[in-house]
Image (cartoon, rainbow, N blue to C red; front, side):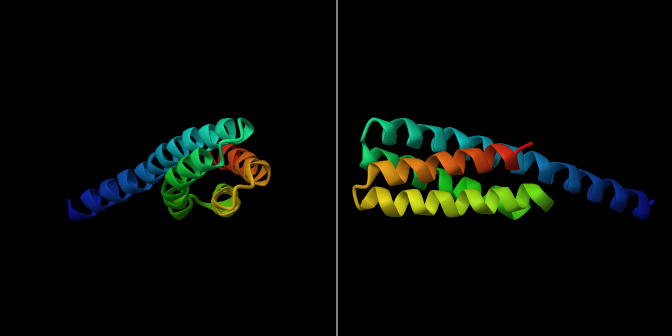
Length: 111
């Protein structure tokens, strides 16, 4: 009976890790899209706010993702970090490009 319980719990934890990745990726994607929108409008400071809000979710998604999805989520994290860095310098155009790259990676990592 203990073996059956252990197997069931393990299966549920394994299945739920994918759900956690999807939830975090969805939140990261929402904020990354907002960063792009504000960056295109030239609002570097608001871009930074959304990119910073997306970062912890993208990082968490990368932690629980596996394989190619993990690679994309990690690339999305790097792109968001770049967006924050350039946005803080007032380089809205460069920061927007980085945020757009993050969006593409997060989408690819959430399939």
